[in-house]
Every structure is written in C-alpha cells, then in structure tokens.
Image 1 (cartoon, rainbow, N blue to C red):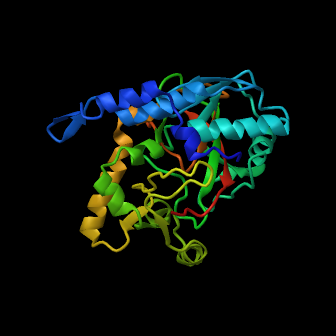
Image 2 (cartoon, rainbow, N blue to C red; image 1 turned 135 degrees about the horizontal axis):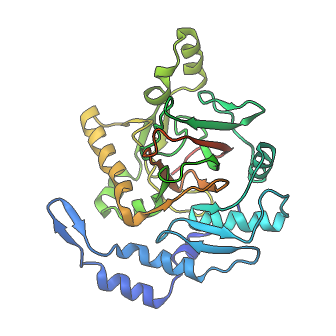
Length: 326
C-alpha cells in the first residue's frame, strides 16, 4: 500500500482540536455505561473530510469507517494509478464498498490479485472453478454463523491483509454486514488499559470455530501441525498507517498470554466489547453485485444472521497479509 502516515491521520484542523477539548470531560456514566460524545473521533473525521480523490467518488458511511466508492468499474482491468488510489482510500476508510459490480469469478480473482497474493482457506468450501474464492451459501438448510465480531483467520501465523466479498444472491431485507473501526476502539481505551496491554500477546486457535467440523482424527492432526496455535499482539501496529489497533476476538482468541484463564478471559471480554460501541461502526446493506473490500486488521466485521430462511450467496477472495507486530 502507499504509505498513509500517522501524521496524516492526526493532522486536522484547530476546530477539531477545540471540539475534542471541549467535549473531553462531558461523557456521563449511566450504570456501567458511558454516554455522550466520543470526542476522540473528531480528529479523524476532520482528516477524512480533507481528502480528495482523482479517479472515483467517495461517500463516507460511518464516522471514521466505511465509504461507498462510485464512478468506477472494477469488472474491468484497472491502471496502476487507480489501484494505488484504491489502496489509499482503503487505508483511510478501512472498508470500502462498491455497487453494481457484476463480477464473474475470474474478474473477482483478477481484481483481488491487484492487491497481493491470494489465500486458500483450509476449512471453507471454494467456488469449484476458482479455488481462491470461498463461497458462502446460506439457506433454510445452511444457516449463517458469522454474527460475531471478528477479524478473519487470526489463527494463521500470517493472517489476511484484507478480503473482497461479492454479493452473488442476497435477500431483499436482512443480511447486512457491520464493520467496526479497531483503531478507534483502541484509541478510546483508558490510558491505564493501553499501558497494560501494550506488550501483551493473545493466543489464537482455529479449534473453537473450525476444529469441531473436522471428523477425521488424522486430518485434524495434520491440520494442527500445519496451523499451530499462534500468539499475536493484543494491540499491534499497522504496517501502512503506523497506528495501533485492537486485535482480539471471541471466534479464535482463546486467552491472554501470561494471565490466569479467568483473568485473561475477563480482559478479552472487555476488549471485545469495544466493538459493540455503535459510534465506531458502519453498516452496509447488500444488493446484488455489491462488493465490500476491508482491511482485515483495521476493522472487525459482523454478518447479521437475520434473513433465515432466505437464500444468501457470497463469494470472498482473501489477500495474504503480514504477521502482526507491536
């Protein structure tokens, strides 16, 4: 990706600085919940407003996360300069969306390959003609179980950089996907929590989500050797933006290294609950041939499972990333 520096992210107007100072101490506690303005979002909102784009339109969706990209046809080959600008807008908004993109499987894979090498998923079925595409077919017989906040494949030593999801067949209502800004989730933590997790790592394992589906013990042993338990930083540094983000989830994170089980799970739960803050989210309603492209480190996602028994068919290409680091 073209570098988007931390200076870019925090280089905002005096108005945003003054607004942040004015509202910093105006949150109220109701029971165990804080309410009021999330002032730490102001700087980045102002930064995003300042950006300009040469090769497409950009319509923001959430406060600091998500944008709909218009006036571009990703079914056709794109120039290097357009791909470079797409990398830049992805780094800024963390997840970008396209409408009316009737991608063939071949076009989907070709577009994804412009951003890096593609993964093959060992547990999920692929499109029979394109092994790089995972196909999610949900119906009355096969329900959707992705309605939990998560980053993809954190059980890999080198998790995905990003994923590109194409809506092949979608219900008229329901089946939205939500995304949460994990930079903002980290930035909003109290200073003492940031200090506590600065050098912590967490254990990540495929077993809780995928292990139960592998019935052959020999195959499970083979997969266990190929995909051993991983230990990733709780708050890694993004290689493009240089920003810290939260990197724990309930799907694959089985504990916090160095802590007793109960204490570690309590901390994991506290950190995972940051994704529940609505102000950090955007929500995307799918139409046929819509496409979502997300940074798998900068955001977590949640697929609403509210469309059963309707049919929902999606195809996803995932791009090889980097090993998380502090």
